[in-house]
Length: 83
Image 1 (cartoon, rainbow, N blue to C red):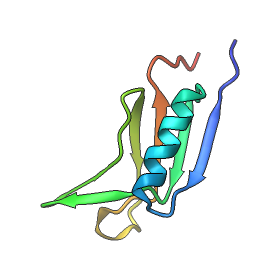
Image 2: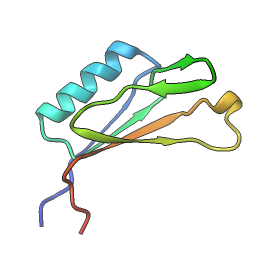
Image 3: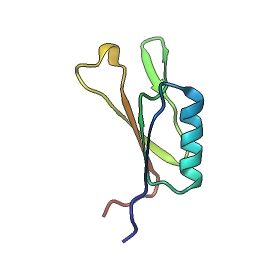
Image 4: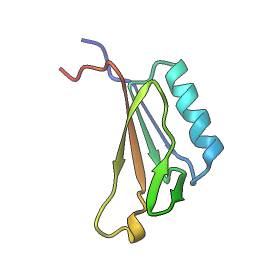
């Protein structure tokens, strides 16, 4: 069984930092990327954040977060098998 490679970073809501860490993590073969305080944007009533073609994105939020703003985004590499 292969070890799981995890990258974690607080991006301070910076768009360039999110882009850079996702690219670097993918180049290094990271299986999971956890971003605290990810960049997000708004368009009409929708909130969105960064994507990467090599990862599936999961937005983690709680009921205590105002206006639906999320504090963590998790990316799982496409093709990763948990078991």
